[in-house]
Length: 124
Figure 1 (cartoon, rainbow, N blue to C red):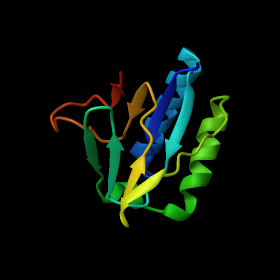
Figure 2: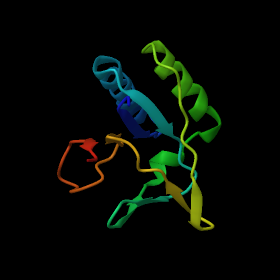
Figure 3: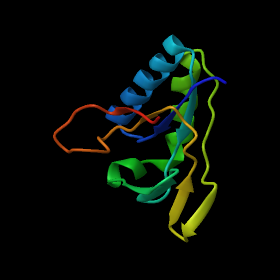
């Protein structure tokens, strides 16, 4: 099975730059790129032994009317097909459950320690 990278998209210049890096990573590793354009400030991810809440800041919600257009352009320029990830269900009305069957995850802001600059995580 082909490995996949989940990218949480932020429609700001830095976020678009990070999507370019994710697309480059996928093209070099022959991984599939799945992009989630968030609509809520939190995401819930259920793993085998725990659930993780990802908190997003306001940068993830800028210019939602152009987000999909930017994703399509960036991903296609890298020679990949855009694959959009939608929530599989909702734990609460504003807490979407995101699939976790990805090997990598990328987010324009660090998901972990605020002092780290790394944004690519390995999810195995």
